[in-house]
Length: 272
Image 1 (spheres, helix red, strand yellow):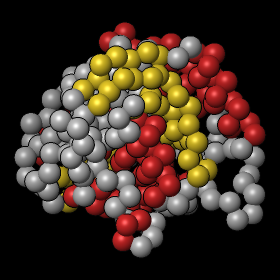
Image 2 (cartoon, one colour):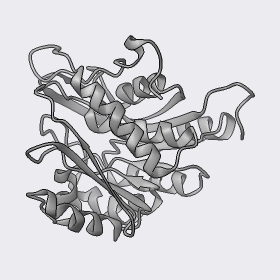
Image 3 (cartoon, rainbow, N blue to C red):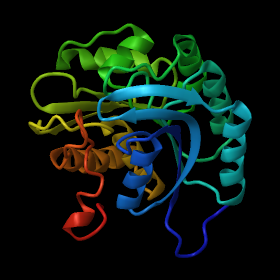
Image 4 (cartoon, rainbow, N blue to C red):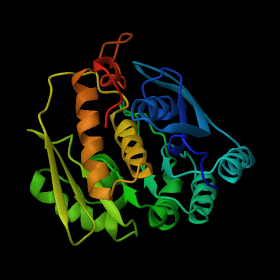
C-alpha cells in the first residue's frame, strides 16, 4: 500500500500509553508530528503514570493489538514502524510476528523500565525480546540498563560501549544504537552494524526534565527512515532533534517533567 500523492510519510508506533503525555505513544505521536510525518498507533498497554512514577499498568489482549496493527497496515500502509513498551512475552511474540511480515524498516526500543525505575516488561518476556523481536529490527536502541538486562554486559565507561554493541547485535538487529546517556560527561551514543561505527556526541544539559527521551529518540529515527534517510543519517538527525528536546525540557507536576517535543516547531517549522 502506498500513500496518496502529497501525503506525508506514514509511521506506526506499537507501544504503551502514558497518561502523563511525556513518554509512550503520546511522545511518539508528538515527535512524528514535529518531524513532518503522519503518526499512527497500536496501543499495547495502558499505564496510569505522572511525573512521579507509574501507578499501574494493564496490557491489552493480543487480539486487540493484532487488530489495531492489521487495520492500519492493511489499509493505510506504513513506511516505518517503531516499538516501545510490549509488556509480556505473548505481546512481544505477537508483535514480532506482525513485524516480520511487514515490508518497512523497524526501530525497536526494548523498553524495560520507566524513567522512574518502574518495570514495564515482564522478566519472562526477555527471551522473546532477544529471540523474536530483536531479529526484526533495522535499528535497536537500548540504553545501558536495557543492555545489561538483555545481555548481562554492564557498561561503566565509553570504552565498554563496543562490547555492549557486539552483545546486542548477536541477537540479530541490523544496527544498534547504544545510548550512553547514563554515563558521565557528554551525552555519547554509539551507532554500529558491527563493521562501521558512528559516535554521536552532544553536550549534557543541566536539566532533570528528561521524561520520554528514549521513546522520542526511537520515534525520531523511525520518522527519518520513513522520509528516506539512511540509518546513519536518520540516527544523526534524531540525535540532534532529541538533544534540542532535552535542552527545552520543562517542569510538570511534582517530579520529572518531559522533554519538549515541539521545540523546533516553536522556532518556526518542523525539524528537518
